[in-house]
View 1: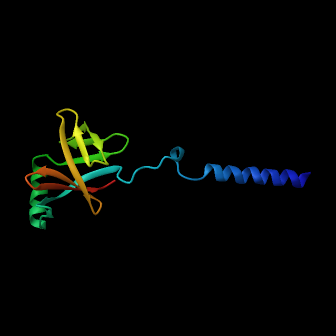
View 2: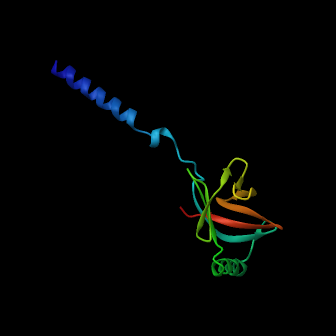
View 3: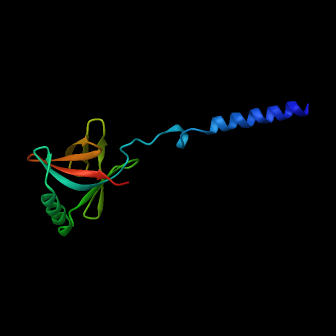
Length: 130
């Protein structure tokens, strides 16, 4: 009887370990694109600009307090000049919309970086930081 009880307890413990292992949050995995993206460069006509142009561009953004970040996750937010603005993200369609002014922004992913279309053959390049 003692052996049977020990085997039963071992079986229950093993079953519990198997049932409780795996991904967290009820089996829901976080998409790879979730995180914060910071602007790190600029592209003209589909090509990233040289280092001097990139550095001048980033310095101008900093001087004008105009640098911004994009955060995708449970809440999708664009931070511009220290203020957060909720955005409506369509990751599959590679667009997001600012609901305040209905401006639609399109982007593409290149080697893990987000390239945001600014018009006039210019794109802001964002790198995931978190």
